[in-house]
Image 1 (cartoon, rainbow, N blue to C red):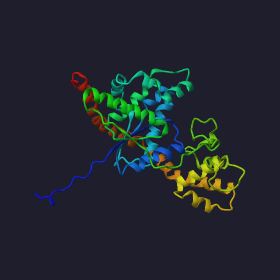
Image 2: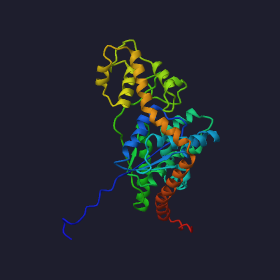
Image 3: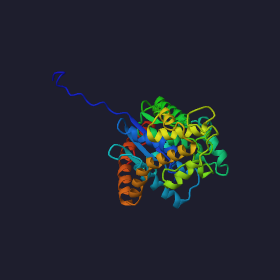
Image 4: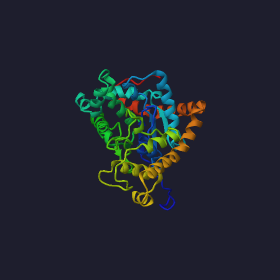
Amino acid sequence: MSEEMKTTQPEKKKRIFSAIQPSGTITLGNYVGALRNWVKLQDEYDCIFAVADLHAITVRQDPKAFRKNILEAYALFLACGIDLEKSLFFIQSHVHTHAELAWVLNCYTQFGELSRMTQFKDKSAKHADNVNAGLFTYPSLMAADILLYQADLVPIGADQKQHLELSRNIAERFNGIYGKTFTVPDGYIPEVGARIKSLQDPTKKMSKSDENVNAWVAILDKPDVIMKKFKRAVTDSDAKVCVGEGKDGINNLIGIMSAVTGKTADEITAEFEGKGYGDFKTAVGEAVVEEVRPIQERFAQLIDDKAYLEEQYRRCAEIALKISQRTLDKAMKKIGYIPRPF
């Protein structure tokens, strides 16, 4: 066959893995910073996503609320744009290989490595009455999540670099002992977007753990609630809509406006030249309401169709199990385990 007649194989897409805990609330910051990026990745990469419910029990959960949060998280991520024709999206606890490989990787993770994890230190201080072993070892579970799927890339924020580095160390250590078993993942830094800050203290990131409910916006908040929160947003005494030093509140609102409309900071500044903060806060609130409206409508449809949700998370879990079982079996064989009889 001549070179001209040979058909070139399409280049294999790199695989991305990412998971988010089912917290019961997705903030505007979560959406802009993570979920919306997931959606953008689907055309360019082989995407595998998960609701990380195993990770969630390092903190005590109310069973009824927890079950509801898991299902709602699955529905909400779909509503945000995860396309099951393009991506695999499952519930972590439905795929038993995650817990199994996590135990194996615990034995290839050093105590000192885990003790240096800043999130363990932070969460131990926050939940001093429940510093459990899972809280200490959950980075090994995170490594299992990633390595099971031979992920090439993992979307990370600044607070997750340490965990990804540990996953890389574990993979390299295992590969060094037994030969090539796991893909050593790289971090994927998403396009720089607005880092959404608290509406009440714009020096801090927007967080649902903030006791002041006016500090954060949930993407399922009703339109009137969203508008009230933006109208109460902290600003400054300058009364000029522009990015500037000491204008953290306005800088944050401009960032939010830019994130949901696609307009640049300069375009927003020009649009609101000569207008007061009241007008600007209202406009930002309205833009956010319009951004989340289709998500809320789609979520309402999905959460009412429990049969559809079950059909999809079952189907995706079966596929995820087949993929991850191959990796787990390979690792177990390398260690010396007798192959499972069933």
